[in-house]
Length: 301
Image 1 (cartoon, rainbow, N blue to C red):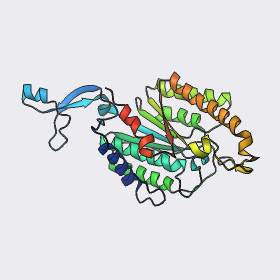
Image 2 (image 1 turned 90 degrees about the vertical axis):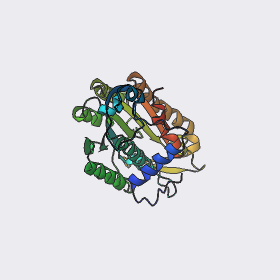
Image 3 (image 1 turned 120 degrees about the vertical axis):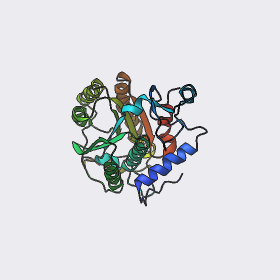
Image 4 (image 1 turned 180 degrees about the vertical axis):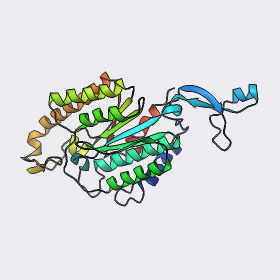
């Protein structure tokens, strides 16, 4: 599917097209919610889909009952979206930046949750919480959040740092317990040990509140991960602080890649210790191949 990154009319419509196109491409759609753990029955309401009717119960009672699933009864999905300066990388005309892919991922999550008639919320952050929309099912708020994502998708670079651990601590106090919290970020912050420990404590706080936490790691495999630049000197500018550095890519590529690998490993370790998922999303890869399959894999066999 070709995604019109440069001329977006409606991110809500685009998300719908992507999700529905992905579902049609499957031999058998596995999307029965984020989880298919059976919870209870409820009476069938005229006009709704018949795919979850328990026909065995109908055969015994001559009444239509619908199977309800655990997440179907109480799912609140809160997306926490990083809008710091590094998310505007790269600045290429023919390539969507990390924030645009993050907005598209958030819109797809919103569409999936809305399709299930569950509650969706959005929080944007940099050094602090910028905007917070608690998880609701109301059509008015859904429209407001879609407009917010569309505005961010088309926004220009703003130089600002991020403080994920601080934001997660704040969110742990305001998000309804037992929510599904999806953090969409490039996770680029200070690499010091103290910052890592703060993030670990913040995630543990969320887990203590019985939240399910998912990291959606947005990255650029071409320029960011491989430092795939021409063989000439460069002056690089930090998109969050404005700091400048002159270098030659060939001289520091191996050292840089080793440092980046160790930096990313800390998030893998935090996720492992807290029984969380990490969804890697390469902005250079087809979106439907890098992001949506995660939700397919979540279906319990």
